[in-house]
Amino acid sequence: MMFKKKQSGDNPGNSKPVKKGKNKILRVKISDFVAVSIYDLVTWVGIGLSVGLVLIYGFQGNQRGVRWSVAMLLLFVLIMLAVRVKQHFYSEPTERPRMVVERAIARPLVAGHQKAVSVWLKNRGTATALNITVSINQAFTPPDFLGPLKFTFIDPDSRPDCEPSETVSLMGKSKEPVEQWEIDALNNRKALWFHFGKGVYEDQQSRSYPLDFFAFMYEPSLEGLMRIAPDRYWPDKADSPLLSVQPRPELTLEDARGRCEVGKPPHVTIRIKNRGQITAHRIELETTHYFAHARTFKGPVEHVPNVPPYLYPSLPFNEEVEGHTEGGDPFTSQDKADIEDGKLLWVNYSKGKYEDEAGNEYTFDFCVLYVPGKPFMDIAPRAYWPPKKGYH
Image (cartoon, rainbow, N blue to C red; front, side):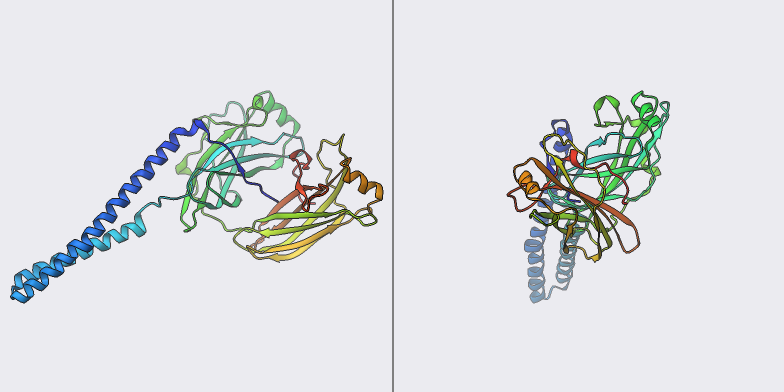
């Protein structure tokens, strides 16, 4: 699935945490300045003076002076080593990622489909966040539930990286499809729906940082935007397992090129890259070529695969593979003319699955739109994307 990073403006409501972070960075800089100054004084003044005294007392034959000078020299050497140890092992980096939860958006509730929520994270730090891993829980409770929620580790969602000031989203889905009575209960405030979790991420030196607990609850009047849950519902930090970064494969769509030629079936060439940390195995991809009248089509695409599944044995991390999907009725001259004039839409929707070495399964999808005159297909509007369902 092609994941588009999104930048968003500063949030004035978070000015206090940002100010606190700046003060912390200032304290770290002052600490580093003091450490470097001590190191310079000890190295150039203390050790130099001690060596000079050892030589002076040695030529004078003053054994007591030599002993004291050697003791001073050893003391300054220990101080110098202690400063170096602090700088390399105990000092907090001045530049580091800092992932914060911005918001949570629930996808429209449809009977027979999974409850799905997107959690948006922003990197408010000064360095790239890597291997972002979040384990997300959901809870459907009676309206008199008082809390706290119970966090359990489930298979996490992850993203390979997030640059400073950029935003990524991760998805949490319920195991079972939602039923109509659950939707009615939520909309009539006769039930509560919570979305909560915690995570971890790394910097470029493989230092790990926790993503603290977050907890949201469904609010019918907000049209999908979930509100922050009151404190009493939040899970107990002491009663939850620690998370660690779990290496995983992460397939993304790099680009797609459509070919529209009279007398030939729809043909799309795709380039997929593994942006994860380990090899992806047993890659399967199924595709639908969908055509609709531009004036009346509002979406979504009806996903009925009309192309044989594309199979690929494995893809190592940081490598790419190029494949193509071709199928359906050949283009007529009228089809091509309507597409070129913008009267007929050609949408390609593909979804697939792949595994890691342990057999854990991951899914991805993408929806692209043919645009006449462009070398590459565009990402289709979100309204065109089919609802999330299992791989056929």
